[in-house]
Each structure stands twice: as structure tokens, then as C-alpha cells.
Length: 105
Image (cartoon, rainbow, N blue to C red):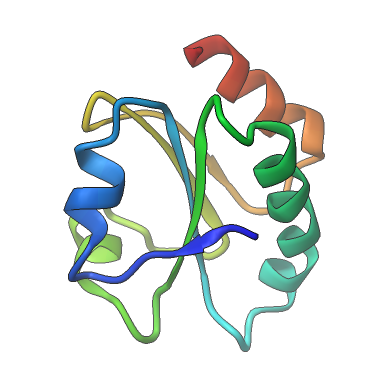
């Protein structure tokens, strides 16, 4: 299951990771976010040891959503080496996320 990341551990889990990290910025009330959730869980299984797949609830943890300019949700940011390497706003098919992650492996 994708790791829930908070403002307190975002730097440790995401920015200091030695693997690419897909971060799903979401909220419980967001319909498209609920549509993306099963895709995120599949990606977590598919990239088990190759990349980290994490989720940030923007209602509870706003610091990094604001820092990275997340205005619409769902927004997926993919980090590599502590920097944003790719971005997807809105729901996309699973293969879009897979291709983005594979490009960074």
C-alpha cells in the first residue's frame, strides 16, 4: 500500500530518497482523486523495490503542496534526487505514470 507522507516526514521520505518517488497529492473529498487511488496502489505493487509511491493528503498536510505549487488535485509529482522530474495534473491512464517512472529508473 502506498505510504502516507506528512509535512513532518516529506523531506526524509521524498527529497532524501535514493529512488524515484511518485507523490500523489490528494484529498478525501476529491472524486478524481478516488479514481486515481487504485492506479496509485497498482503502481506501488509494480514498482515495489524500484521506486517509492507515496500519497499526501493536502487537507491535512499543506506545506509541501504549497511549496510545489499544487493548485489542482489530483496532482502527481515525480521526484528524483530531491527535485521534481515530472508532473501530471488530473487523472491519466496507468501507462502514463508507468512511462514517467520508467524514464527515471
